[in-house]
Length: 386
Ligand SMILES: *Cc1c(COP(=O)(O)O)cnc(C)c1O
Image (cartoon, rainbow, N blue to C red; front, side):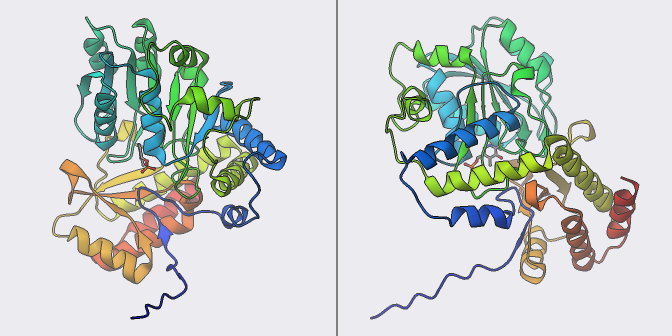
């Protein structure tokens, strides 16, 4: 039997879920430009630009600031697998899915994991980290800056201070914050910070930007045994991204073209303007949802502008509402994970997707589906005041 496969024609969606976010057409165009070899001088220049632009968004001087060739989770894995040796202790903040994933990854690296648990929807209090640090000699302290499962933005400064005082390296997950809310690697004094391309950087999924402080690199170089993962061994990858240009694996050329273009867009917009845009649209969305009588899930003091969690209203059918949003309005939002499955919706306002038009379109669609009013008006009012 002869199968017939048609041309792929994906539907047009407005991506307002927990990632991927919408991509600027300039990024898609950059991806479709001709391939060159991964050691071509033209590509080496593209790599250098990408590293320089990444340092700007991470707000760091770290020389070793590169994209790992895989999605955000590989950034997480690269962070742990390079600095942890079996038997060492990792103190990890857990207030959602991604803190939980960190524990899994660290455990697989042979770490003794000390969890600092907090209720979902709340930030981890520094006192709880201080408590966990008492009597242990951790190699790392790790936290998620932007918990995509709950919409909580974790303050880093105090935890960074505690980690340093304990002689530990600080690992931070900025997958849903980089390029949307301030990530200040050097000001924090963080040692290993990673992200992903498909959230606030508004690039397709496929790369994980990561940065290592000199202190962290010294730890990696001073290991008593090799990094367990050949693919993610930064001592080898460093030789490709630095002056030596030694082949390790074939760089995903087109993805790096895309990232460079996405970073150029951020550079043109300016970090402060971009953060202000994310904040403005987040506030308009929250005002709109509350204007419709709905309740935000994350505690007010620690709400994340790029990922908004709202409680599913009484009587509404979680999956049915999301299905109608997608099918009738072309809008994707996310459902809850784990303990908040069926209880919250997750609305991403990340990068190119963070626009007033998207906020108003979603609220208008929700008004229709839920038979409520007041959302669009409240958001429009907030946008006018901004
Ligand atoms: C999405 C996400 C990840 C994982 O990234 P993938 O690209 O899905 O592998 C890790 N941490 C956080 C906080 C995320 O939001």
